[in-house]
Length: 185
Image (cartoon, rainbow, N blue to C red):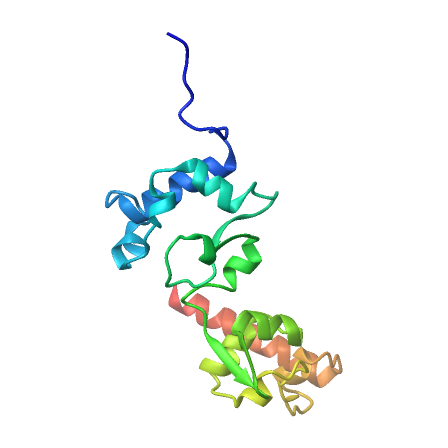
């Protein structure tokens, strides 16, 4: 009996494994990702549910460096809602992203940080820890106020002053710390 291929398009490809993984996430409760897909109502359209060839006909070949992405993160896997996308595009299309509107434009936190030349963690901290207004948080310049210091202080030495007073203060601080450590032993 001759070997009969189940699919017209070759299996064992990135497209085939994307199709299989998509189905598992949405249909198999034992899949590790099911709770974020099938468990919250994400579905695979009837045309793709059991037909890899239909999936391949609609999606085409997967370009290098891309994987399947849903345009509407709350919508299902269907021809009008899926695309091949880079990891960066997919990262910006997550339901956990925080949207920020400034001057009439809405981007997520990572996109604003990238545009302004600020590290995303820094921008998050400015908004959520320091509670800065959005216009100030998006300022790429350093927002740290220069500390006022005097000679003979720790701040003086750490600011780069190497005068005798600042060096002596630095040495005295180390002597006190060593004495505390010895006393603790």
